[in-house]
Image 1 (cartoon, rainbow, N blue to C red):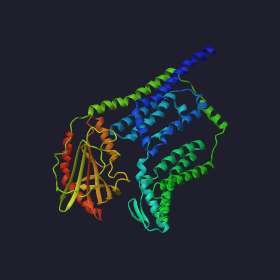
Image 2 (cartoon, rainbow, N blue to C red):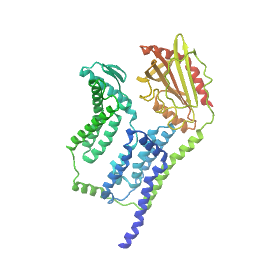
Image 3 (cartoon, helix red, strand yellow):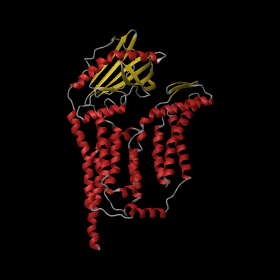
Image 4 (cartoon, rainbow, N blue to C red):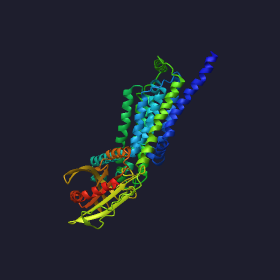
Length: 512
């Protein structure tokens, strides 16, 4: 008996080493992606909670150690296909420079690696801790604009219900005692992310039934949205009733977090009234069911699964590096061949968008029949990550505290230009020297689109086919007084005249 136990120890150690190597492999092979996640944790308070996600997951797994010690790894080879799909998703995101998809693909590799090497039974026993890792990915900024609009709608409605007259312009509004603006910090996205993250953990620890868990998670999403609207209304009312002496500076942020803390306390307190404790007997029964019919895999089988995971993980970054090097072009593009359709005009606004540096740039003001239109073209080649054509760093207005310009509205439009349908994205702006209508769209893979997601897919396709990553951003803008339709008519007329030469110039650069 002693001899059997002595011989078994090295085999168990080989399994442990194989599993440890496989689980740590994504952090080493995709170190750049992991660093990009940590960089966002460092730079944004919204996602600072990411630091505690992995420790919480490890703690939850440690709590299950008694159950896990009764199980033996049984590699589940079909999950290797899912891991390969995840790797291909990372590759597409690398080609299209979609950081959040890269990060989610990396995070998903961690639980999938456990499934491949340890098997379904062990993975199911720690399914929540494995899935909870996905919340470490800094995601949620896409909800900022919708939440800003929801908060503005709720605040204006609540003020009107209170009997206070409101004059609204987009997300800016005025009441008799002062002017207010719903900006990014007022969107409530921080409250929403924090509530959802805590709500998922609380539901897992507090309830047994899936129905109650899902219901509480849903409540943790809805409550902060409603609470943020109430918070915004409360801040405006405090400012209004105090003659704009209170809640107009940093103190309104403090009031907001205090209110949010109170709301979360009430939500968790109410949730505890329906708590479902897991009894020791239930745990023992569940453990017995999990062990039933189990057969241990050999050390070589576990090691082979770990080796397959390493090969699958390593393939995609190697292919990405080869493809990017093969598609790089050293030639510098030029926009000098563009033939102006209208006469040269004089600058009519001091507004300047925040756009990433391009390989070639063009800024012009054109005039005809009393109409003036601004034209900006940015041609990108060999685009760096996070600073290319389609990037969150490309902004029409800067920080709300330093930039005097504000967005008052935006929408997608389809314009009929020279008999063809041109998709554009319209943004209405207001600043010190008036109001503007700006139309934006992209030129990628020889065609036009205004859709960021489609643009990223086209960029990924071009890189995968080793045809480079050329792309251009086109921005035209015009001024208006009261009715933006006048500016739209000017833009429409200018694009109809300028588009053929613009398209020919862009295609000529792509050919080289």
